[in-house]
Length: 454
Ligand code: SAJ
Image 1 (cartoon, protein in one colour):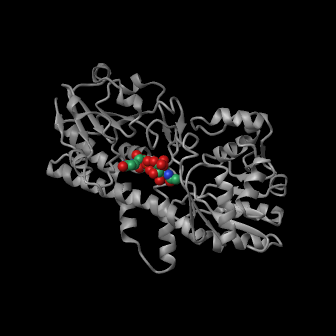
Image 2 (image 1 turned 30 degrees about the vertical axis):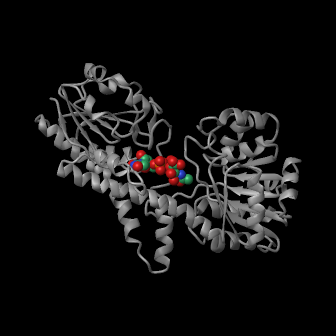
């Protein structure tokens, strides 16, 4: 494929490029739909036949604001072609974008099985002159040492000579993937300068944001991991400081609000834990590579331990608060508000709600959970109540795991109509204004002073 800007823009605008986006999940489906919506022909390839059938009917299988109308439009115009046939997709495509999940196992080892299975299946169909773009989050070196050898082994192709490849790690914010698709700068690292330039020229036609070109795929992957590890480590730092300042009876939010007046203080906030598809798992990609070169990244590992320990800290706050009114956890009803890992989205991936509820249940209380995004659903081993009022009824303690807007708007007098009094509130996300806590409530938030209005 030629790499000069004009050629690529002309070909893109004339619809001369055919894309395949592999993996129609939270990143892949918006990516495929938005590219198709710009007039390119896009195969959306996924092994999930059920999802493909729904997409063929124009039904979006991903809950992402703004996505539905785009999917309906591009499928109805046959610009996005959902398929589970790799030959149909890959053998007709010039550009292949990989958006496959790369979770970590329970042993915290990156799991590349989806990527390995994919390239074992599709490589024989890759056309000479194709360009492969890896948007999945992977360890530095995975393109160079796993993906390229897989393609060459399963095809008669040779990298650079016959196909280009680059990493362009996704940096989307779940809940804003479509609305901010155009804005997020992209990091592009190709196996050679031609791959980097061609991919940059292609993304120039897809997004309006800055394109940051780096030396190679492993550097691009290292950038993605560095930015997420930076966030995870800083959250761990503020979590650790919050626990310390609780004991010193100093308000962490007063500290943060004052400290952020300093130009180089990047505010992060203490919470019930770190969930989501990115932060809890990304550090392990780099830890795995470090171990291969006999280096132990202490801060990165300890940050993970601190963040994973926050649900336990919430348990401690629950126990101490109930003891103030002479109640034991075992003899109480404790209602958990929030399953999603962050507010106002329906996504519970690695949510701290799971470890919190599992540890709480061992202490013997009645436990109910409510999340407006999962009403009446069974999620793994948790049942999410159908309505808030029954969850509040006769509760001795409310624990907020997610600061959904719906919870922020709750009126305390409304809450107290259903719960026992005095009511304990343990707030894992600083959902409420501590100056607004009324009589009959004992309130604890992470890193903040005890409010005892019992
Ligand atoms: N959290 C805290 N304290 C904080 C910030 C977050 O406890 O100060 C918790 C959240 O409650 C959540 C978890 O950490 O449980 C992750 O929060 P997040 O805002 O990072 O949520 P994500 O994973 O949806 O963030 C994604 C990430 N994007 C990618 O990995 C590509 C993240 O790097 C981005 O910063 C974020 O989107 C964004 O805001 O764009």
